[in-house]
Length: 185
Image 1 (cartoon, helix red, strand yellow):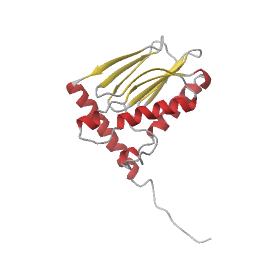
Image 2 (cartoon, rainbow, N blue to C red):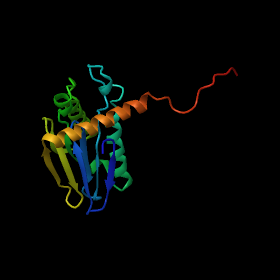
Image 3 (cartoon, rainbow, N blue to C red):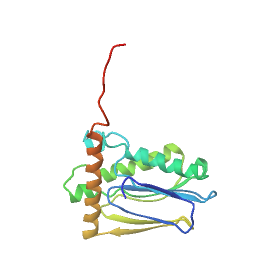
Image 4 (spheres, rainbow, N blue to C red):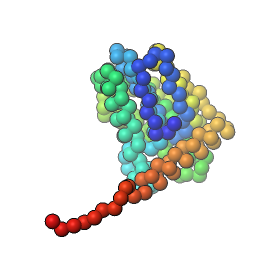
């Protein structure tokens, strides 16, 4: 689901997600035999558009990548052995919902830049376009299988991503616990 990170060392595990404008990064350490996938809705940097969906709420990509890497390291992976495959980043929100912002393109650019900055080799990618994707990441051989989604299934993925985005932004705008009391020493 959007916002989730999963890590495993079980070779029989297959991680699966559905993507529209979201991106899933599949990382693995072939020596430690650990692997994982994240699914993020928004990139982690501001864009010139100053649209709230790509600025204030846009930090999810950076957090999702760090959570995934840290999860792999906790299970014995080493940063210098990590390999990456990334998917998603379709511009389905722009084309389907009348949204003028190319969130998918921003997400795709973010994940490639992040991996390059971290020195993690990008071995495979299927980013962009207008079709959603179903992604299966196998633990046995670290193979990724991608199915392009069309029609009603894409609309369902877009609706889920939109709901997740609204919930995330609403959670950010709510005050967090209790009040603040100021006092003089």
